[in-house]
Length: 359
Image (cartoon, rainbow, N blue to C red; front, side, top):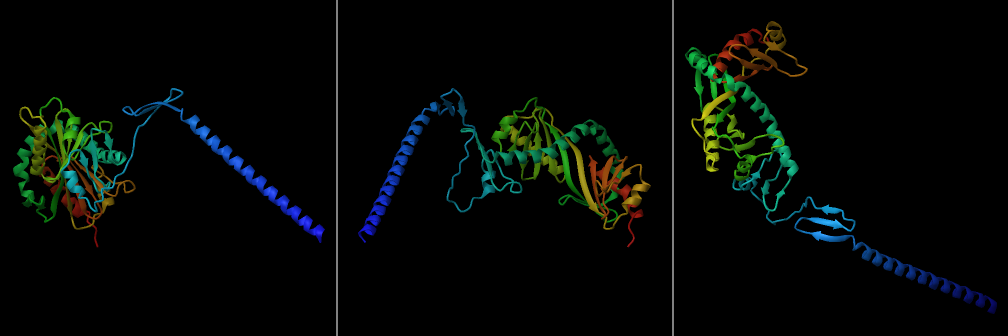
């Protein structure tokens, strides 16, 4: 009995000694790690030898400089709702296009900052791409504008019978057949006669203006009344697009000129305003056999449904391009005068009736 008790006491003492040894080892290891971490901290504190907050440069002990390039931060105003349209309209250097990005993009010069720059550049690219095509068309057509003026004056009385009635307020012109032709877009140019425009100054001091010289060499400016867009080039030329009529395009051009006048860029001499392209559309109210039309008028028409669903008809006189769809919808483009558009539709209408689909 005494031998059993002695063995139990020995085992207990051995376990106790083992536990105390383990605890001591763990404590020593913990102290070692702590001292190592502290030493490591002191060692790493010497990595930065100098800082320059004004230039945002941090110099490593090796002499290599680390420069801060951008800092993104957020701030919550605690306001449940902000009227973004009001903010964009009443502040400078602000952009707001809810179809592309659900926030106002605002810029200031000091300190230099730009919120959502990726969205801003995407917006500028999407707006500028169709504008490039417009500007190219404008340059190509400007040389023929004087001869077209005389042509339109001579043909005005001749083509006046094509229109039975007009409604300028709604931009709708009714053909003698009863089909209504509606103006969709008018592209016009105006030359201010100024040898040089500071586009950076214009973009920074006006509302709803974009300027990214790496993507497009013009300021893209928008106004609400009339709802138009202008491309302002440093040469003093303005391209106005988005107007729904000639008078509306002229009013828009004068508004853009007024904005530039307030910035100190006053026009010199007589203004050169010219309509470069008029786009209209109509609905014939009946389906059209485009295959038969393409075969019969192969000299003027091209139809490749794999590439484009409409038939492209290039009329020689007047020089108009018509996009004809199987549904009976027709788009007329390339006209510089409304009378040319009416004459073109008057000529194509009997052809469309000839290839009308029978029910």
